[in-house]
Image (cartoon, rainbow, N blue to C red; front, side, top):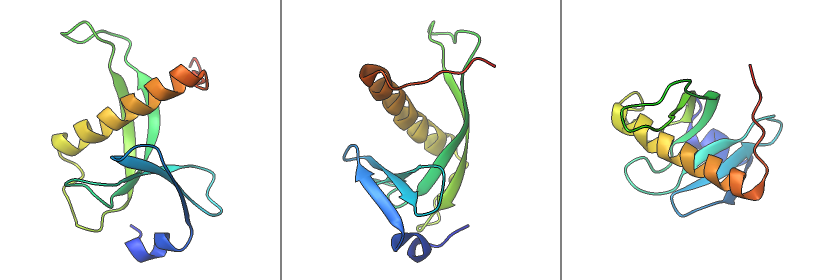
Length: 110
């Protein structure tokens, strides 16, 4: 896992909301999310394998399924907890909704 100071010099961060920002290290071909406030402030992670579920949940919604890698965890928070997963899941939904509004979301069929 990378230390915070290893990312600081090369990050190109563009704020999207007060809660999180997109961050990309120079030379990487992927973007990460940096949490900007609250309990998980400073954690940088990236999503992998984002998919819509093929079945509805009990509320009649089709949830997003995803995996993630934590790149930086400066305060050593429990990033395997349900609370953290739910928190970053909410951020993912926000990102997907924003991209849908802009017409920039590409959905590949597998």
